[in-house]
Image (cartoon, helix red, strand yellow):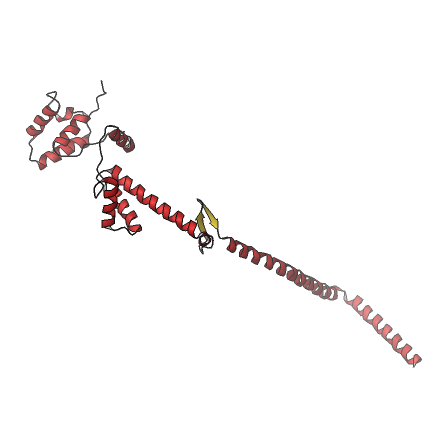
Length: 240
């Protein structure tokens, strides 16, 4: 025996709302509850979840789904039971967008649906999915043909990266140019920098040597230079 699942408050609200639209009195709703439950109860508060759904459908509303049952599970159960779900607006929009992206107009889409489904528009979700998958397959075939017809255009794409074989491949020419600039800059810049550094160090050495020598030592060096110069001049006079 299946476990009893009580109704939810949203179902009761839906029953009263649908009843007001149909101008049903409280007694009318109690009679309907008695009819739906085969005489088991007349009080709406004692309805089960399935019985409340039955009342909602009798009043022209949509049944509730169980709060703990995922939508995928519910759809699976519907498929197993052979229940066909009508085409949803979101699926139809996706189908129309894919068709427009291929330049297929309304008449062309009708012809495609007629050829695949036997009628001009999909009526159920399954039929909509068939058309969507067919349009996706057409796009994939066109992209594959374009790559096969002109493989160099895919490699020389000016974009920074392109999709080839399911992966992302950077343009090889740009890679070579980039690393070539780095190598040339290193080969030219490093020797130039080293030469400038040596010149700076040499200038610093000579300037520093002159400024850091004590004054008495500099005076002694000058006197010694003067004596040497005098001796050189004396030698020249004697030689002359």
